[in-house]
Structure formats: C-alpha cells, structure tokens
Image 1 (cartoon, one colour):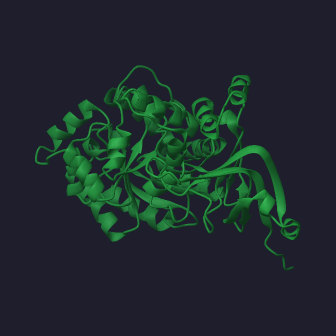
Image 2 (image 1 turned 120 degrees about the horizontal axis):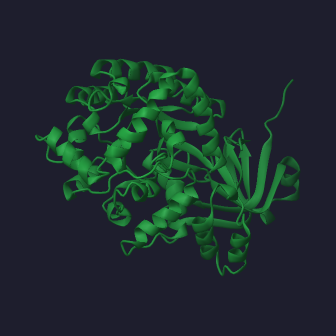
Image 3 (image 1 turned 180 degrees about the vertical axis):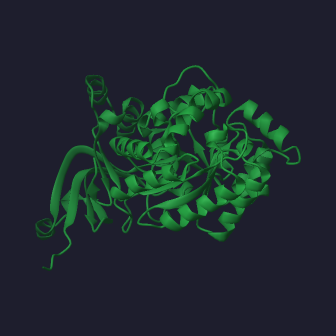
Length: 432
C-alpha cells in the first residue's frame, strides 16, 4: 500500500530565534497567528496563517493550537539522570553533598532493572517540562547508560549521554579504573553513538575523581572518535577549586588540567564555570568550548553567581542546565526565572527574549547542533513545545495586564513551569 507522507500544520503563535537577541535586534521571529508546517519529522516552513492559500489548506492536516505559544523544544545542556530521586536534599555545599547524598544514590544504578525504571521516569519528566534534548550524566555503571539511551530511543529523542569516569576520591563501589573506564566507554560508543538521534559524551565526573591516567585515556577516546562530546564539571565551588590545585599542582589552573589532557574543544561542555580566572576564560573561548549555566543549582548549593554576559562577550558558547538533583526543577522556565535573579544580583539583566534564546538556539549552539535544532528554519528536526500563556489564576491576571509581547514573555518566563506545557513534540510526533 503506497501512502503519501502526511504534512501537518500547527496553527498558533510562533516564536523562535535566528541569532542571540542580546547582540542582535532582529534575532527573534514572532508570528501572532502563524503555522508551523512539518513533514516526516522535519520543519518545512513557518508562515502567517493568512498567507496559506485555500488550496494548500486542503493538502495539510491542521492542528489548531490558537491562543497558545509554540517554541522550539527546550535544550538542557547539563543534567544528572541518576540524581532525579534526590532532588532538593537539605543543607550541604558541593563536596559534602556528593558524599552525603549523591554517591549513595548512584550506587543503586548498578541494578539494570532499577536504572531502567528511573530512566523511563527521567525521560518522561523531561518531556513533561518541554525539554526535547539534553546532555546527561549517567553513573559509572554502563547499564545506567544503556537504560537511559533505550528510554530516549523509544521517543526518538536527540539525547547526548555517557558513562561517568571516576577512578579515585570516591567510594569503592562507584569507581572504575582508567582502563575499564576506557573499555566500557568505547563499547558504549560503538553501541549507541549515532544510533538514531543518540550521541555519546565522554564523561569524567570532574578532575578530582579521575587520575591523570584516566584523563589521558579520556583524551585518547576523543582523539579516536572526533565527533564525540566531552561533558564534565568546572569551577563550581571554591573548595573544589582548591582541591584541584592540590591534586594537580603542576597545572596552572582548573581548566588547564582538562586542556592538558586534550579535553577542551567545540564539543566540550563544562558545567558551572562560576569562578573562572581570565586565563581560563581565554582558553574556553579559543578552544570553542561551551559552558552550562545552572542557576537553580548554583543558588541551591551556594556555589556562586554565573557571569553570563562577560562570558558571552568573551566569545564563549553558553547553554542552560537544570543540573537535577542539585538543581531544583526540570523546568527550563523555572531555570530561566532563577537565571534572571542571578543576573539581578550582579546588576545585570536577562530579558525573556535572551532567556528563551538561551533555552533553545543558544543551547543548540552550545551543543554544536544548531544545524539540526534550536529554531524553526526549514530542514530542522521538528522538536517543539506548546505552551499555555497562563496556567493559573495569578498568571491569567498578569497576562490580562501585560502591555507588550516582551512583557507577556517575561511574565511567562518568571511564573511559568510544567503546568504551562500543554504538549511536547519530538520529530513531529506528540510525546507528551
């Protein structure tokens, strides 16, 4: 039986970005009554509904979301799937928090059945919050990566993840060795990298939990498979930075540890980057590395305030990260709400346009995926989220008093959360 591909047209208000609104006036594209046309999981075009001819309307399957806002799917550039169940754990800063809460929780993922159950929950939670792509930490156990990729593959998600490399300064039950870490990572790369939309990230937890041998082998993997990602942590906490200095006295700073072992580059994403020296900023920019801004986590763990505009002005790619469980929400809107406050505390602003750019095209650029994701240009993968402008009586009241599009978007960014997500689409299929 020969069937023609069905072409879908989603009618709603459409917003996307073709550049960073912090730098460019014409960065945002907004259609009050627009249509997003999707065929075979890809964007065909966007246009005003009024510009659709009667004949063309006949050929399309129309999905009516009038009164709603369609955005490209949110992109989370740093999140820990095994920490989902320990979100909002009391009272510690980074290093104590890892030992008290994180490591005992991650131990459970040695059980493949447990990992599968948690992976399904995690993927559904992302989609419920409108997040369609994420760069994800698993645990040291290869079965945790298998579980996560299998769950993402069922939804055809574009997901990047990897097995944690950790061969020292952690409980015995969570350690690999430099060699087993390399071998297990390579086996996972062969199994999952480029399988459907899945991609692999070499994932040393952070410099203190890897020996020089392990970091060297991580660099070897990146050299052997040049389109892999590198995902780790950098300069999140002052005590952590002091610890790195004591473990690697021969390196000039924290980032220099990673750079020395060949771990910086256009597909390298460093979470946090709060307390950076000028030399580190220069290295990140020159190597085209990216940084994940995780405001809910940075505030929750008392880590510090991320310098968004100075880093962007230095030419560093920045994505948003929820960093669950140190972060407190899967919602990108909640994350931007906290990001706004982090900027305010430094006398800076974060507009709704810049925030939503960071959560979409900015994240795609940070992950070197802007050719595939991040806006509604023709040929992009059709991952998008349908948002209700107002999901509560208070939001309703605020919207009735909003004076402009910028004002409405800002109120949505500050008040919005998972309740505002009406539907999430991945490759043109509704998955939530």
